[in-house]
Image (cartoon, rainbow, N blue to C red; front, side):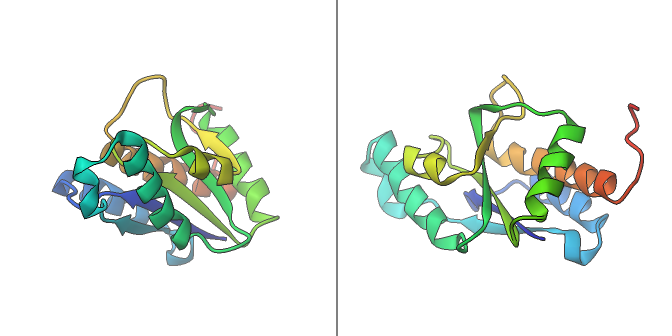
Length: 156
């Protein structure tokens, strides 16, 4: 299964880039999480939050291939354990050719994007900077890939 992370924002601190790359480096190339960075629309500065989210959603939706499984990262989404996350990925991989994880901009995700998603996922009840979620997702992806490949989970 091909896996992609679509994230709004291109001005990423070095430590975020390094964290994301570190977890990808640990995986075989065919299991790596492919990052698709999208620039925030330049015209968005003078627009409302809803208008900015709608513009970002249009950019994101253009990146998603037909027939893909889509997980939108949203603070109101479901919270899974690491083994549950791995199981969801394993199940999706048997039915879909690719999976896309979506991280919106600072305003969150438009409802149109949430409705396209197969599921909404939250990493915590805490609010995280959207750039930091890249690293959290990369770590959980790495953990899921190791669990799926049969590596024992350290808490079991």
